[in-house]
Length: 142
Image (tube, rainbow, N blue to C red):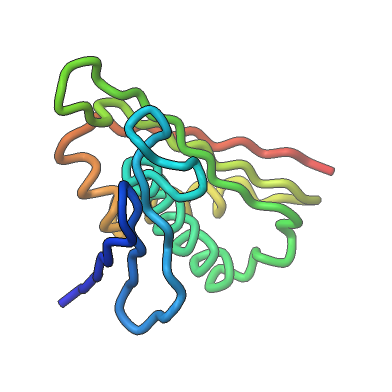
């Protein structure tokens, strides 16, 4: 069972704690709703969860396929469109994988991404229940 604890700090600020971690994640409303701008907003953290989940999958698969040493830089960017009506939510999400390095094995790197997005990343599956999720892969040879 996954657990998260949210502790109210007053006003529009909270500290979030995940299971087994003592370091708080400051959560707050946007400035226009009484926040200070110092904390994180919940919806962007959902995109962090998606990038983190698939990024960890891909990194693990690169290591298993023994292609991780050829990759000098790897980034996952997530772009999302939010609906106009309330409650506002992400209805379109686009994940961009970028690999930089020499002699990149494009076939194996593509397999790492497709395995993550289709089989391993549970956050991908959750997002697909409420949004159209697409992805692209970029290779930069150095």
